[in-house]
Amino acid sequence: MRVKTYWLFGISGAGKTTIAQAWVQQWKSLGEPVVLLDEEALKIGLNSDLNAAAILKEEPTRRIAELAKLLNQRGITVIVSAITPLNAQRQLASQIVGPKLYTPIWIDSPVQICQRRDPKGLYVKALSNRLKFFPGVNAPFENPDTSLIKVSTDQFSVSQCVELIFKSIK
Ligand code: ADP
Image (cartoon, rainbow, N blue to C red; front, side, top):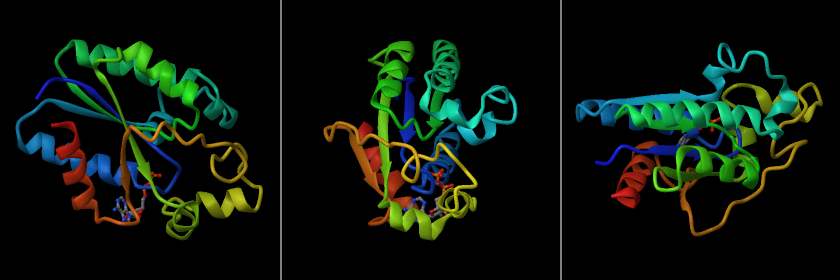
C-alpha cells in the first residue's frame, strides 16, 4: 500500500491511541515500515515546551505534520494520534503533509461515553476545572466535514474499527 500519513483525530477517550496501537501492530505484521506519532507521548519530548493552551494553536500540529512529512519522504507510513480539535489545524496538517498523502480519520464517540471511559483520568480533572483547554469540556472541538472517514467507537469493537479503517482506505 502507498506510504501515507493517517491522521486519527477526535476528542480524548474516543479511542485514537487504542486503535492506532492495534493498527500499527497489524502494519508491522505485514512487514510494512510504520511509525506511530501519539501526541501524548510527544508531550514528553518534542512538544514539552508547549503549554495546555497550545492545543488550540497551530504549533503542535505543525510539528507533528512536519515530522510525518519527513518520515513519508523516507518511505515510512505514519499513523498520528492527536485530538486536533480545529478544522484550521486539520487543514494545516493537510498542507504540510500534502493533500495526497494526508488521510484524516475521525475517531468518534459521544462525549458522555468518553467521560465514562476516561482512561487517563482527564475528564475528572477537566470537569472540576483542574484542567483547562480540554476539547469537548471547556474548549471547542469542531466536528469535521462528514465526507471524511469516520469510525464510531461506541458502536464497534477495536478490531472492527481497525477493519473498517482498513476497508475505507483500500
Ligand atoms: P484517546 O487516545 O482517543 O484519548 P484511548 O485510546 O486512550 O483514547 O482510550 C479509549 C478507551 O476506550 C480505552 O479504554 C479503550 O479500551 C476503550 N474503547 C472501548 N471501545 C473502543 C473502540 N471500539 N475503539 C477504541 N477504544 C475503545
